Amino acid sequence: MKVTAIIPDDIIQDVKKYTGGKNITDSLIKALNDWLYRQRINHLNNDLKQNPVQFRDDFAADAIRNNRKAV
Image (cartoon, rainbow, N blue to C red; front, top):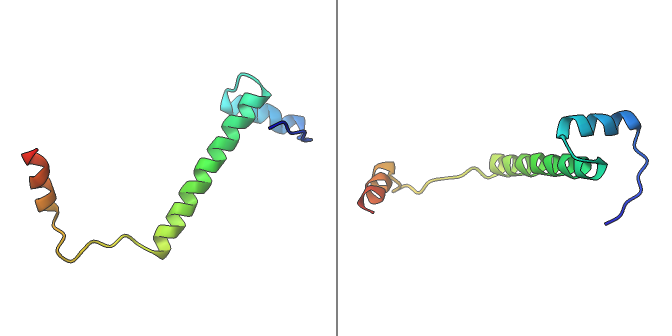
């Protein structure tokens, strides 16, 4: 997608510096991907905070370890 955006030069220079991108487009893609990654992690963490993982009552880590050794 082509986008025209007015972004201050100092922000662009910082993004290029910290992402190590080959050009402005590459730098912005890297920065946006990093931001999205962090947002997805934050969303997952919030979901887990609201609905924590629960093990079954009959869960035993030793049984899982023994199953893996048998393979």
